[in-house]
Length: 111
Image (tube, rainbow, N blue to C red):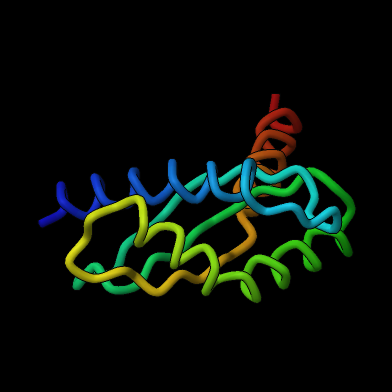
């Protein structure tokens, strides 16, 4: 089952990236990268993690816009992918690069 979750997550990551890049025409959305998609065990919920290159207020605004556009994105995915269930999509801000920078600073201090 884990392999299936990974495959569907990978497909969703690719399709969501394309939809945001080519079909969404909202100028309030910053430069976005879909970094990860994690599927629930029953494949009915997709947690989409995105990285936004802009200031903090723009990041929060982008997440809000994407969460408000979930219905549109979900419909577009249903048109492109032949899945038994079209998963519910939730967008989250990916802060892993910030954590990585903190770890890097800590490691540099110890040298």
